[in-house]
Length: 207
Image (tube, one colour):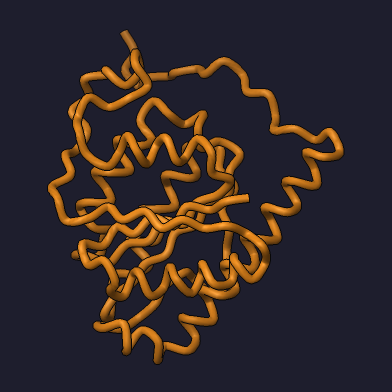
């Protein structure tokens, strides 16, 4: 079993990375493979609504989104990490996930997801809520911890001193490992993901 740890911070080994690593350690201790995917520092375009991905399965824009989607097809779970920018997830990870999920919900459906946010002081709960919405619109079980999945500090060293936050990350990793094993045990006993109905689209404008 494999979990993708997505780092939405432009800092490769900053506070968000430190939080994700703590989750990753707990997952590995439970026998779960992890892979870190860095959004990076190159510009990430927002979705332009061209619908090319609906026809081809790939975004026509050439950045990290398509490689991530290919990894996602083989992954069993996800942890999305982001710094808090103006009480929101980073602009890079927001644009990245908008394009990764658009028209591709079936790739993520039934796979557990969790969000992790890193902040200096405030705005963590708003950013956390924003990231969770990608899971709830895609039929993904959300993995929780003993507290909201947030870590506080302005440097990796300060983050490591947030003992409650670090414990929250470890609990999150343990909980995700447990859920992944439960899902695997269910599949082994013939319990499959529910068959989906044909989607119904209801607009709120009526003639």
